[in-house]
Image (cartoon, rainbow, N blue to C red; front, side, top):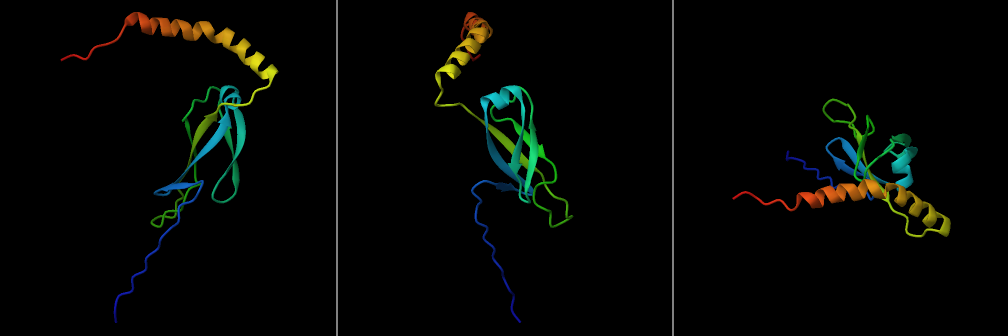
Length: 129
């Protein structure tokens, strides 16, 4: 009798990526959801679940949904679903939205300007030879 070899080729998924037993995905959220926080519905391998987005979420922040990954062949425990948020900036604003953002920018102007001034005061740093 001879040996039997079985080759399995998995097609990549358009939304989920696999890393060992973990499943990774990227979810778009608005900058308002990131700033104020929100609860969003995200797809999982089995169905959907709720994900809490905390106030002040930053671009690229990563959240873990425990037990929503792929079962391990060794011990049966499921991996996690790793969710990376992508904050989307709106491209088409109406006049009221523009006015509100300008008002918001005016309130925030001093915070960012003073940080920038402090950076510029310190001047460029040079690498030691």
